[in-house]
Image 1 (cartoon, rainbow, N blue to C red):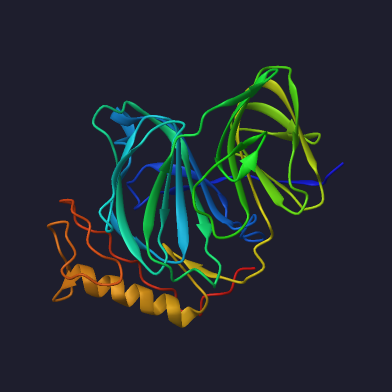
Image 2 (image 1 turned 120 degrees about the vertical axis):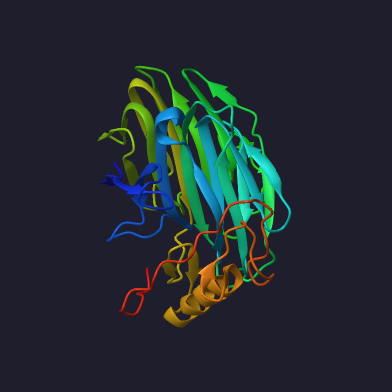
Amino acid sequence: MTHVEVMTPREVPLGGPRAMRVRRTLPQRHRSLIGAWCFVDHYGPDDVDETGGMVLPAHPHTGLQTASWLFDGALEHRDSVGSRATVRPGELNLMTAGRGISHTEVSTPGTTVLHGAQLWIALPDATRHCDPGFEHFAPDPVRGPGWEARVFIGSLLGASSPVTTHTPLLGAEVMIATGKTVDIDVDETFEHGVLLDVGLVEVDGTELKPSDLAHLAPGASTISITAHEEARLLLLGGEPFGEPIVMWWNFIGRTHEEIVGFREEWQAQITTDGDVVDDGRTVADGRFGVVDLDMAPIPAPVLPHVRLKLRH
């Protein structure tokens, strides 16, 4: 039976100390990636009247893709390549930062409960400076005895996603009825992660609680999941990434100096005379473009007084 490593979440604020709270399982001190998946946040279900929902003003990214997946509620996405889209449950919004992009995410006025996952994918060195872009995909469900799945990245259970990936990847939502066991055939060259949203499951005999993330090393051709309570989970996977990265704030690069440069470029775009602009627009176009939304952009935090370390 495959060894299963369980990573438990830590609670962090999203976007500032008074922002909504999320449960983060990746990166961890001892593990930074599962395939090219490098960041896993799980949030909700949150009462928007109490939490204020998600309000993320313009902020930058480099060297990654963001995959937004909701279970409940809706978000409005805007970015500096002109995309404006609504993130809805069961539909993937995939943003490719490439050499640089900025975007906003705000819960819609009609959203009363917000519940979902925010996932990042590291881009390999060969394509990490590609043009930024945005894709939307609503996968059709596939079903079997006691289970239902939506495959939003890669291929699984006879379904495939057409969205652009830069390394071999898998992303799927799987729902399993109480008492059912599902044996899922997977690519044995992939490592896999199982993020439990709701319910109680065993993954290859190891128990998971909601917001836990299980890691399974390459080598297994089947993952067995038993639901002791009705469960919903995300199954993530990919070939081991094989490249060290430097990840800080919203940037992925390869060296400390590169991250310093990205930060300086963002600060230069959003400040005038040292002050962050308050009209929600970057002062000048540049690497990260301009987002058309009347909220002050998020300034980059201060870099630590040590060199940023490579993550493997």
